[in-house]
Image 1 (cartoon, helix red, strand yellow):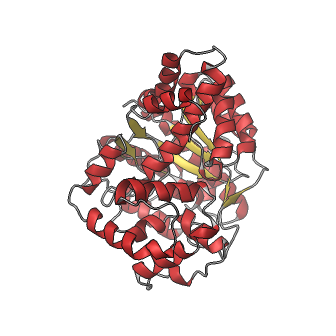
Image 2 (tube, rainbow, N blue to C red):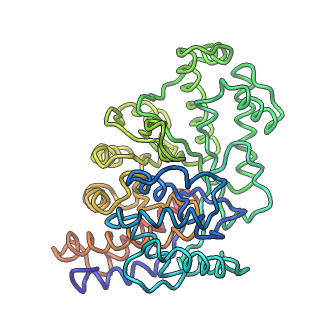
Length: 420
C-alpha cells in the first residue's frame, strides 16, 4: 500500500484527525445503508456495470434487490481495476467482515444476507460514524426542505439553489417557492423577499452554506431589477439567461448579507448520455474557464467561494485563482477528478501553490455514510504520499508539521470557513 515507512507513519497519524464532511447527498432520515442494494445503487457502480456491458433491466425498481446486487456483482470483474471497486472492497471488509481477495457474483448472497443482518442493528448509523471518525456531515437540501425532525448539529443543512437559478420558469418550481415562503413571485421585489425568507429559514436551522452546480456556459453578471422583472414573465432563451444571472447574483448578495459561504461546482453538462443509467448521464467539457466568474469574485470580496471543478485540466486555473483571490478556496476533488491519478497531481499542485488556509482538502459527495471511510482513506493515503515525497523528504516540512498541514486542510479550514 505504501512504498516506505514515512508514508505509513504519516497516514497513521492523518487517520486520527476527526472529519467534518463539507459536501454530501446524505438523507438525514436514512443516513446509513439498510441493504447491500443501497450500497451498490450508488451511481458509480451502476454506471460502470452498464458501461462494461450490463443491461439496464436489473436497475428497474421492480427487480428484486438481491437479483440487482447479483447482476452488478456479476460485472464487477470487468471493472475491478477501478478506484470504485476498491471503495466497495473496503466497505465489505470493514463493515461486513469480508475476507476474500476478489469479489464476484458468487459472493452476492452471503454479502447480501450479512448486510441485512448488520445494517438492521439499531445503532448501525453510530457504528459507521464512529468507525469512520466522522463528526459532522453537510447535507444538500432543496430550497423547500422543511429541515425538520433531524439533528441539524450532526447533519448540517446546506441550501442547494440549482432549481431557483435554472428552473424558475417552471410553474412547479414557482409553486414550491410560494409554498415554502408564502410569497408569490411576480417581480424582483417579491423574488428578493422570497429569497430572504429562504435564507432566514435555513439560517434558523443551522445552515452553514449555499451551493449550486453550474454548466460550462454560465457566466454570472449583475442584472438590473427591471431586466430581472421582465425576465420573470418571459419564457424565451434570452429571458432564461437574464433570469439565471439575476437570481444567481441575488443569491450571492444574500450569501454576503447572511455570511454564508457559496459552494460553486463548476462545469457540468447535464444529460450528455441520454440513455445512461440514473445519475449516469452527466459529463464535462473543456470550454469552461474561471474567467467567467472573475466579476463575481471581484464583486463579493467577503463571500468565501468554495470552488469545485470537474476536470483535472481546470485545476491549474483553480489553483491560480485561489493563489490570487483571498475569497476563492479550492474545494475537494469532484466526481470525474475523484480518482487517485488525478487527485495526486492536483493535490500536489495545490499544496505547492495555495496557502494551506485556503484549501478544503476533501469531501465525500456520498449518498450513504458507509462511503465516507473508503473515500477519505483513498484521499488520506494520497495526502500521506504527497506530503512524504514532496515536503518531508526534501526537508520542506518536518513530520509533525506535515501532519499539521493535513489537519488544516481536512478539519480546521472546514471549521473556519463554515464557522463551526
